[in-house]
Image (cartoon, rainbow, N blue to C red; front, side):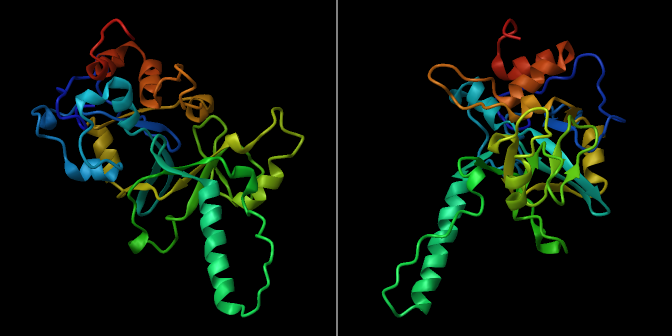
Length: 278
């Protein structure tokens, strides 16, 4: 967390230091500094790094450990090609729901109709294209820029566990997770009665934009210890972390760090400042 919080000192990884050789597409990533080159200083937080993960300033200590943990980016690798790697931030909400996008589209269509129609006709509002997902949050995947890409990656994308979605790709080394596909068609196939457990809108997470690295950049960062890598179950990734009264699930960053075990305890406690709370 010292990579993002300027009041924290760098701490090393207990036991095995290297994530080298453990890079798997579909793995979940956590960024924490362990490289000797960044062991310093309260002013060593990179504005470029913060901006890449949707932050404008380092999360201050007075936010409290859970809120700061919410701001520690946790990423899922979604693909690799000749240009490099792509990932999405799993714990950065935009503040919008899919239904907000539908309403914006409806307003735009209404404006276009007003320009074209001279009469007083008042047609019924269009049926939502993604009605089954209206209350699903829209997540911010990263600060990726498609200006140098031939394919679009800045539109709406989805992570889910429905293998019947047209155009989706199964993520290797994952717990039955799929990336992409047609969200309109997904509304129909998720009703398939052959699934062992029923699917719903909560079986999908929707993202705009993405995070990217060049072909060698991410592997270099992993070898330098900038990132820790692991795989976790889809139940952890899809768990609701909204506050219900006084109760709330752990931040995703915190739960992943707890699951990583004793070797990562010091890094987790560097943020929480509580050796006994692991």
